[in-house]
Image 1 (cartoon, one colour):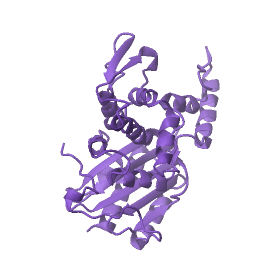
Image 2 (image 1 turned 60 degrees about the vertical axis):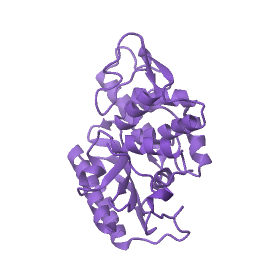
Image 3 (image 1 turned 90 degrees about the vertical axis):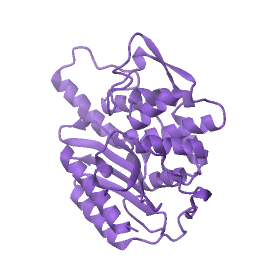
Image 4 (image 1 turned 120 degrees about the vertical axis):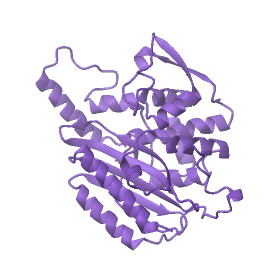
Length: 329
C-alpha cells in the first residue's frame, strides 16, 4: 500500500491554505446536491460537510449539529496515541495486556477477539493501532484508550488542537452499555423475558440518540481531517502512519464505493446497532486525493435512519460521486 502523502509537505511542491478562509465560499452546485441527498435520507437525519482544500470552497447540511460517531472515534483515538509516541511517552513496540473480560465483539474482519486464547494476551501498540483503525476492532480501541490515559485525554488532545466540536467520553464498552439499556457495570437481568428485553433495547436506543457523549459535528470532523492531512496534529512519520491505516481500511462501502478509479481515499467509518429497521448511526469521514494532489475532505453522519443497508450504502456512494464530480480539478 503506497503511503498517503501529507498535503502540506513543502517538498511535494503543493501549496494548501493552512486554514479555510474567514469567509468560506460555497460550492453552490454541490450545496444543492447535498440538500437533495439530505431530503432523500429522511426521516433519517443526514449531517455532512465538504471542504475543498485547493479552492477553500465548502458545502454542508446540518454541519454544526453533533452526531454520534461510533467507530469514527477510532481515528482521533489513534491520533492521540500517536501523539504520545511522538513525545516519547509511548512506543509502537510497547506491550499492552488484554484480559479475557476486556474482549468485545465488533470488527470489520475477525481480529483480536477471534484469535484470543487463554485468559490474557499481549499486543504491541502498533498491532492495536492497525486493528483499531484498519479493521475497526473494538477490543483494540478500548486498549488504546486505556494506554492513552482514558477518553478524556483524547478530548483534551483534540481541544488543544482547536477541534472543539468533537469529543470522546467513553470507550466502546461504555457505548454498548447505553445502547443495551444498561447502567455502567450492569448486566442484563437473569431470566429476562423477551418482552422485558425488547423494552430495555427500546429504552437503550432512545438513550443512545439523546446521549451527548462521543459525538462530533461534521464541521469538527472536517477540522480533524484538515489538521491531520496538513501535518498539524502529529509528526510527519505519525501523520503518514495514521493516513496509511485509514487508506487501508477494510470496509470498502460507504463513500469509498462511489469514488472514481484513480482517486485515493483515507477514511474511517462508524456504524451503530439497529433496532428493528432503525439504525442509530451510519457514518464515514475521509480524505479524497486526486493524482495531482488536489485534496477534498468529506464528513457524513446519518442518524436514526430506517433505510435498509443497501439504501444507506447507495446514499453514501452517490454522495461520493456527487462530491467528486462537483470539485473535479
